[in-house]
Image (cartoon, rainbow, N blue to C red):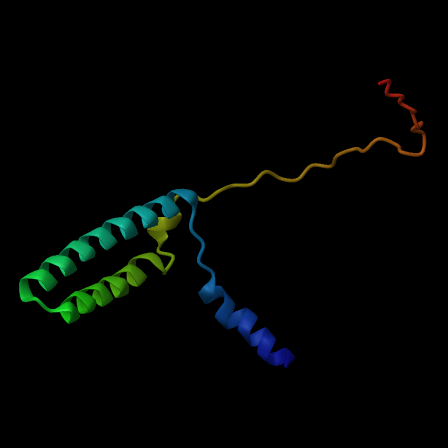
Length: 108
């Protein structure tokens, strides 16, 4: 079982890592919305002209495949502005052993 997990981590997991930046996500979202609108209009018009609901379904199925090709892989164009994170810094916490308890009275 350990060999299978090691094989997955070395060979399969890197292929499934879809790293894109925030601007790339905006591009993908815009492209997917535009593609959905275009294919929806084409499907409606063709289905209406031909009076066949199957044509509408087929056009939408083709649109779905196109959306998968556009949006699913992490193309290099979607990762042109990678995020650089700050290095962690150490935070000095106050000494809790020397802290004193304070009683607070609330008058009503």
